[in-house]
Amino acid sequence: MEGFLPHPWWEIWYALSLPVVVYGIYTMNRLVKERRETLPLLALAGAFIFVLSSLKLPSVTGSCSHPTGAGMGAILFGPAITAVLCLIVLVYQALFLAHGGITTLGANVFSMGIAGPAVAYIVYKGCAKSNLNFYASIFLAVSLADIATYLVTSLQLALAFPSATGGVLGSFYAFGTVFAFTQFPLAVLEGVFIALIFKYVIQVKGEVMVKLKVIDEKKLRRLKGVVQA
Amino acid sequence: MNHSLLDEHALASPLRHKNNRLKLGLVGAALLVGVSSPSPVAPLFIALSMSFAAIRLGKVPARFYAGLVAAPLGFAALGAAIIFFFFGSGPEIFSLELFGLRIGASADGAEMAVLVVSRTLSGMSCLLFLALSTPMVELFALLKALRLPDSFVELSMMIYRYIFVLLEVVVRMRDAQAMRLGYDGFKNSIQSISMMAGTLFIRTMEQGERLFTAMDARCYDGRLFLFEERRPVKVQELLVASGYVAFISALAYFSRGTAIF
Image 1 (tube, each protein chain N blue to C red):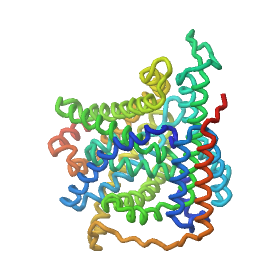
Image 2: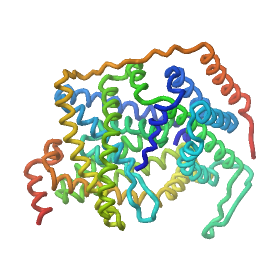
Image 3: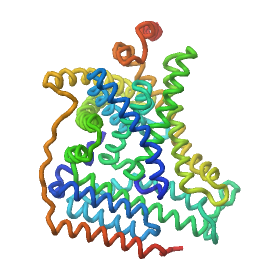
Image 4: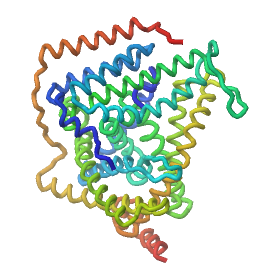
């Protein structure tokens, strides 16, 4: 939310996000030099994240909720590049939809573009090693990424506005509980949503996933077999 | 999907033809003053003047503008409520019983909550002023001039272009699904929206390959050259803008001790 974070916190979050974004741009440049066809692909992925985050998910309570799409980006392209994509998407959200803002951009990039994707990536890789069901691991990665984003956001607010009696921890609980009502169902919902997307893509055109090196041929055949059975 | 993207209003705005650097500078300065002001007076003044500028000079429908401000304000109000109850010490001015728990709010908390809401309002109105008067296309040339990495600006431009392409696809698929009762009930809705997003993803990847072929065929080497229209700043505009910035800075400085509670 524009103007919500006071000085010095918005500058601090800018400073924390900057190195990651710079590293992301560096990684991206290297990738683009190696294989030039990646730049248009990344651009489309960024646009996809934007469109995904502007979709309204049907929600149990009747209210609307927006997925973040960053978890999916992290699974497909890794967290560093996702941070860059998220930065661009967040600027567009601010300028097109009046979501978020410019002074809070640093904090938002940190929670949505860095913390969330990092968790998604770690969980996804961890699950891949432990041989868990592919779709279950995507669900877990995306949901936990959402929860991480929400926890980091609560922490950012708590650090900026510590409670008089309980300090930072006290107001962290307060912000956390209030947002939990909307964020937990949303996290589960987005996990299901993204897992189903993967399911459709693999059923209809699994080669795309092989090309993006998300899965290999062997796994694709196995997944298709599992789905059709 | 509503097509009320702010960019469309920016393209139609009369303020579009003003110098971009001037607008960006003005908004940047107002944002900074708003967020660093220690009392709610200056942020509220910025909010009012920026909204006035957007509606009057930018010819944005007032009702549409109100809708834009209202949505994020809900979130800000929620956050402010928490600050109201948990932040700061001092004389207690308000308390209530909730689930047997006594929650009290102090004057400091109230002060802070008002300040945060006013800052959010001022920030929102600055952002909206920029978004409603400057189309994104015009900012790309500026980004290049700011020496941001080429790949980053190119990526932003392509993302910008494809947001609109994909949105159109989404609207079409969504209508087709809705006509076949795809959004009847919660379970169906989840199924449909995932199917739609999955198809969108496949379309996206195919489009990405086509885009590469098309750009390669036209000798794309990682740089598009942009044409930035020259719009010299009029002395009078510069004076008004700097006068405004000087005024809000002074207002923020002299009202720093103002307290409501």
